[in-house]
Image 1 (cartoon, helix red, strand yellow):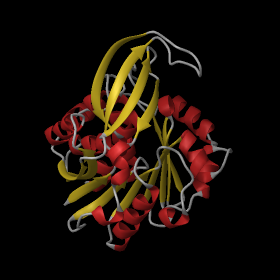
Image 2 (tube, rainbow, N blue to C red):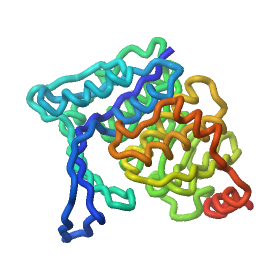
Image 3 (cartoon, rainbow, N blue to C red):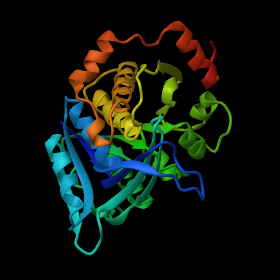
Length: 312
């Protein structure tokens, strides 16, 4: 059985600086490097490195020098590729500034990612989960989700970048993954996290909360998972690592509570290294952290519950 990721691939141009520039401000950066990235590709690598089911990816690339490192990184991670290639369009790129505190600011030029169309979806035979994001056209994402739902495939959407979602897409989802800002955009709610989760008519909704951890609502029950303590170097790709690791864990049949813990551990490790795909840990590293870490301590859980608006 396989997990299919359909989505974006970008070459990331990353510069480190003391701080992220404010609007109109210029800051002097330091080292500069390029890394394979893009939400779809990052999540595919995270899914593949998490082990269990084989991982496939549908993506669009230009016929240029930027495409080569993206393909190489995905293949090295063990991802099987179905590529829509267009020589007249540049491969997607992203421009990333990373501060000394590990925070980042990102601007994406979609390029070939915008070329994915509904007719490009491959056969879903043998696919258990379809993982989607919003760096490709929204009508294409909706068409993929509806086709997968009709085929009995579990549909997972990471609603990033944040935007309002059409009802046709929401109705096709089994799992929705968002961060706190994306949750507000998707639910049109500025209230408590728990209330926003409850307002969404999706069977399972997961919200990542950065250094606090994550919260999920499924079948009327709320699950809390506190963050794993690490020294952050670069948070780029941490959310994508979470999405890929969570989908992989669900794909191998883990209960949501265990999958949530696995994904939080993987995301924490991703924050300790520079780059998006370069920072994604192997399953053995995640398992080691899970064996040794002290997470979900009572004080941490109470603080997380209070932040989400849940009883403490």
